[in-house]
Length: 361
Ligand code: NAD
Ligand code: GLY
Image 1 (cartoon, rainbow, N blue to C red):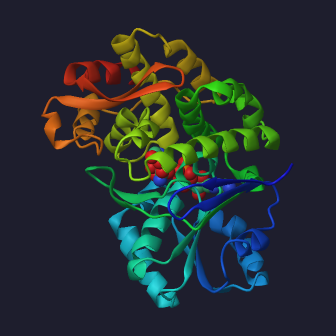
Image 2 (cartoon, rainbow, N blue to C red):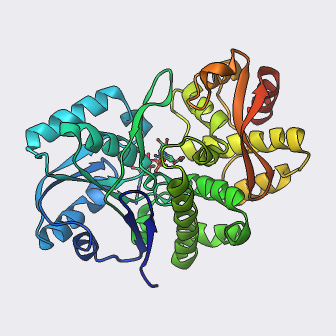
């Protein structure tokens, strides 16, 4: 399988390298001069891959100040974990000209990216995504941040990585349910993009079986699509908001479940609700195709253990709302058709309550 590189054409463009068995030292040296660095990872991924990444970097001339591990899981995207990580980096002696390698899933990327963007007012960031979700979505585009009990990703920034390198071999240890969670964002991007990408969603089963060609194809579709959207609207003044398809309700479910619900699982259910709202607003019925794809990905179309009123309350704090929206309106990304997303669709409290009701057990 050839190694493929997609450039994200923003003001300071950065490459996204996707392949199996990457020569990581070589890939990194193609973009960055070796220097002092730290590896930021979590307690699951660290024991699996951090030593190998360290060796590859050291062979390439890097000095690794240390490996900084956070407990794996969404609860690490917190103020406490952030403060702790910054303190540990300072004690490791990472300097202003240093580089942080974020080796892990979306949690490591989001927290590590926020740490890299703020430690000493910013050090270089390299994303080494190890989960499918991080490869298809979170490692690309520069959004980083942490959660508050009041809502998901309420603290954050845009921090451009210098490089994203995704070794598909890392997916070999990813638990099945996390493959499914990554496929939720893949399905999201396929619906938004339409065309060949949507057609290729029939590779989901092969991807679940670990077929590297299928995985590479889906990751590349996502990276290319996201790179195009991010190039148009990096700071989400407008069109980038379409990438939040399924997230208005998805994020609210996560917050209402005290972050004990995986992001991908919440987004999958959020997309089913958004499809139902899309049918009401635009008359196109994509609900069955949503359910079929979500089922093919091994995800439930409904979630349990979430109180509807708590989810509605969390939706009221959604970042995509604006001050002029008033108390009773939400704004959704909906689909007029496959490949035809419409953003900022006003949705009443009553419609939102009904849509949430449909996806809660
Ligand atoms: P995660 O980082 O918690 O990873 C899921 C689990 O898989 C964790 O237990 C992790 O340790 C484990 N894992 C990761 N790679 C592994 C591997 N190769 N082998 C074995 N285990 C592995 O969660 P995620 O699903 O990767 O990411 C979800 C997060 O991403 C959420 O916080 C979400 O808000 C965020 N996100 C951010 C963006 C963005 O643009 N910044 C986009 C989408 C999602
Ligand atoms: N995952 C949404 C975005 O990157 O904009």
